[in-house]
Length: 178
Image (tube, rainbow, N blue to C red):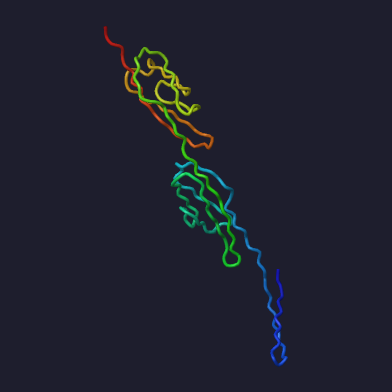
């Protein structure tokens, strides 16, 4: 609203004068950086969006327009500001950058073509297998795969929805000729 300020001054001769000033108080628009969120460390970049539009982002690794380049895991606080002068407002957002899970498909190995189903065990448990002649649960059939080298993949997604993959090579050997 508008406020009226009256300034009155009396000099040493007892002369009085006054002036009136109307001050308009503007309610600033609050900057909003959005809710805190998490990403995986393999996310290349994030385009941040604050409201109202056309504010300025600041912090380590973020451009003024809000492009953040992910470089390492941890928690980073980024700031969004809007307005100027006495009407400048700002807000922070915490971005949690999660590591990828450590995934191990095991070591390469060889098996004879008639060895039967090979049950694969990846670490951590709960992942999914893929490749030639293997079920998603990890049952590898050398007979179905055939003689040769077969790249098998183990994919795991953790509670943060961060995903990683590892592979191994299974060599299926033919039976000797007798």
